[in-house]
Image 1: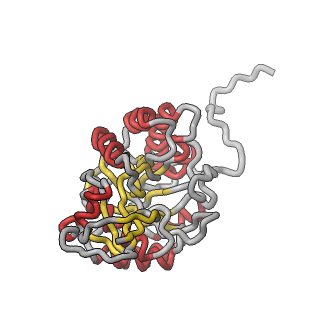
Image 2: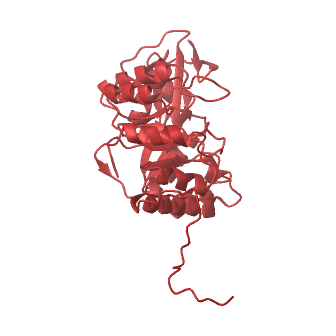
Image 3: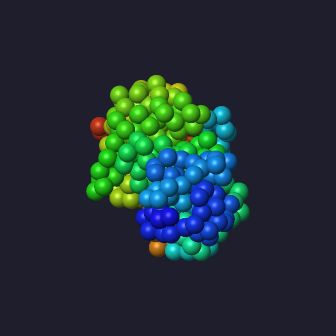
Length: 65
Length: 255
């Protein structure tokens, strides 16, 4: 299915958020996820199903003021 | 100073953005003696650069204050705060809800609404706000235990544009920790804030964009310390006229 991942169109075969993260290479521990603007906690990634067109944000620590 | 039950001895909070290199950032943090640093969340890249930065931060031994910088709506700020809590493992959040892209002025209406949601959800909110007293009251009502009024627009380095308003804020909120956040350009600006009775200063660009960020980090720490000591020592009131400091008694007649 097609997803929008960090504003980029991506295609995945995964059906869950956890599997999509692995497939997309987001394997580091220091990430947080939001699906369609809603925070998805780490423990809910396995049970969160995806559908085509979903917007996924994968954020990580960065410099900030 | 106590912030949300945590005792901190340094009254400088330092931002981590815009440094020439991660090495300079780490040295500036050490030179400043700060115990709290601010960080953000941004889109992870394919090379996992966020993890490397996170490792560097942890090595500094400082406490992390994540921000919601760049958020223009309550929904964005709340979601970002929730994501930050998971990644950084802290309830602390520097809450920014930006109203204007050009001035980076807080949207105080969205700020109060987001603060109410986050405080109710167990967050310990550090709200980036203006020097408006009524907004400060609403933030305290929402559950904020401290306030972070701006000194001048973010990144402007203009110093305190309205010291009278900060003085009024100090008088109005005698028991609420006040942290001037944004606008500090020089150590004298930081010292001025502290002399007004402000509890701490949060700054970033003034250090990161200095010719020698490590030396400026130290200079800011000293300015803050001097200003704090000056405030506690109760400065004299200015006088309209000259008053000789050397005794007149015993002055020789030589003319």
